[in-house]
Length: 133
Image (spheres, rainbow, N blue to C red):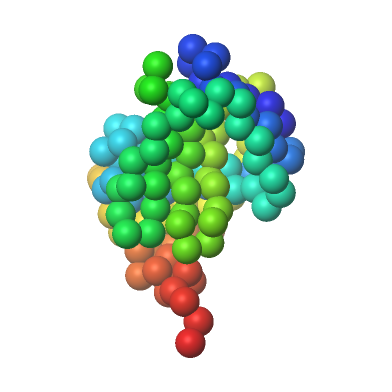
């Protein structure tokens, strides 16, 4: 899959995926005024225009990346796992299926969840990604 930001200064290439997940946490909603539409890839991600990427460490465990020219949200980077979660909006030509929703306990009342998606609360997400002892 190939995608780019609104102004075209940053482009990204990654393996093809067909599923998108939503994050309803308060930080994602503040960042984008709605849930983050997230693409998880397991293979290499190649960015062009990296000099235009600004990173903001939004928590102890994550950074958010955006284009410094147009402000397009590019990724959420999970620091402990060294994993990029890409914004689905970068790939407007793709036909994604909504597969999962996380932080459903933080979702505001003014929009509905997909009844067929896999759902996890904040506690369930933190338990899944907690370091194994």
